[in-house]
Length: 267
Length: 306
Image 1 (spheres, rainbow over the protein chains, first blue to last red):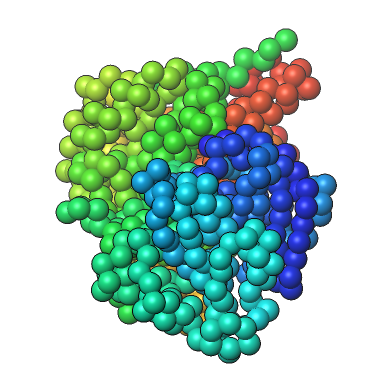
Image 2 (cartoon, each protein chain N blue to C red):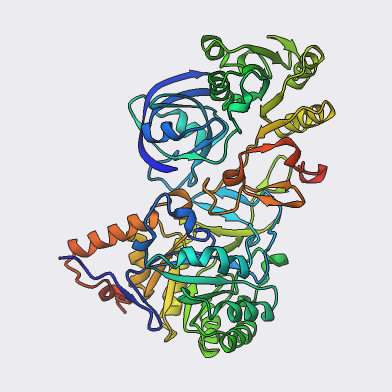
């Protein structure tokens, strides 16, 4: 975990509101693990937006880190304007990522990404492949245009199935519908997922019913990203202990059965 | 020439006037991957209750122009875990440790200072009588001169260490509250805590914080905080530690010039974990550039033409 104020943007790709940046940050890259994230400064010396933005690590290639994001507000809009050759001030790698080890060798795994929640799954699939596991990605978006990383997954030779809410590409319906259809054909050893909370809650139900272990990467508004402010908490139960746990430090990846989903009125 | 940055609070000498502010610096150890804690004037650790505290439900943060509203609700470990797990690590560093003390009753504050007073490594207590996120409508002892007086008096009686009263800016007359703190025997004053604030989602028409109200910090509050420190520093004899939106040495110097003997850096730590160290370096550069041998020379030197 370090601060790199000089992570140079070496490449930039964009599709409408979606951006994929390659950053040269050797020290952060070498430590990075799938599911971890960066805190990226979006404004240089202006006091607004004040806070850094948490962004998942999308990929790593030796000294290069990739981040994928969607313009969702003032902060990400400023970030999108950065040009190749400019540097970003980043903190990373932060948090605890997906739990990956040798025991996954030969295992069959599913990874589900909804919208911009696809961000950490490319890195995950790459690492799982090097561990000798086979991974199928389920990538869902509202329409064809909301699946900008199709080409990246194809190039990376990652087995990917797609869904769109309007049926403009792949399975018609939510990505959870696509997952359920696939589960009728085969049962994986584990399901990973990242995306909107409603999607994750549904996958938690689906995996519980079929007794498939699942790990989710949660999104949260963060003050610092390294455990100092306690602003990003979610309700988590570990064994008998339940409480507000910091997503940035204890997560962002949690086992599906550890997460206590908010009741209707809190959503 | 290396300028002398030390700050003298009377009851405590600091190697420089930069203290990390409570609530923005965790228990200190969170920052060791980024900075050398030995460089800091001091650390005000996250508020401690007697027992562990659960805090408020999320959302706990909302970003506003040049500011941050938080309603964490003082989630944290209690005194026992602090004494066993954190303090032994923290006291290895050569920096002043201010323990921020919280309570839901006067007796709880007293219990915290009584429990921690004999523990090795604590320089002083900072009595957090001003957190706006614990009771409804931001109520806290620092809103009343009487409640401030009673609480500090009791804490002093139970404490073996100096007591700094951290005051709330959410009052009509800050000088009156500061005087109460002084009369009750406070050794110093920390000013300001956050400003009671809120933000609304116009689509759902719900407050953006689950707690409805929260405390505003960051550059947005600096001019108001500075005004309050100016008003208080000229009216009390005990030292004032100034804070509110300090992001740079320029900001820190403004507080020192209006009379703060030391300052705390808060929200800036969340944005840049090395903010305190950068500000210390900038202060040194300022002294060198301006031929100032001792930073204390600038304290309270505000020039007002009348």
